[in-house]
Length: 130
Ligand SMILES: [Zn+2]
Ligand SMILES: [Zn+2]
View (cartoon, rainbow, N blue to C red):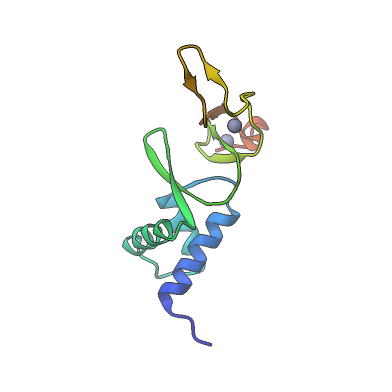
């Protein structure tokens, strides 16, 4: 069976986002994907990300003014941004105790929340970070 080049590009990129420990910047995606697709250009990465987003297989995450991408369907999670190495991780721990349907004074009905945690990742905390 022959797989078209663009299908392969899509599969490689969606799989690496699936396996990443957190959302990735476009430059990181490009670098990692090139391990399998050495001739992959940055324009193709952008085009593939747009397509995968349209297919809802991935979605953009805006963090500190930068657009990162992550695979969809990871459930309720938060992001942990390492202040030393700059890597972003996905944490399935929720620091917010906020039952859905909570109503704040004034009549604000809470439906969702977004929290980004900052600190040191395990590698940096061990003193091995770059
Ligand atoms: Zn770190
Ligand atoms: Zn939460």
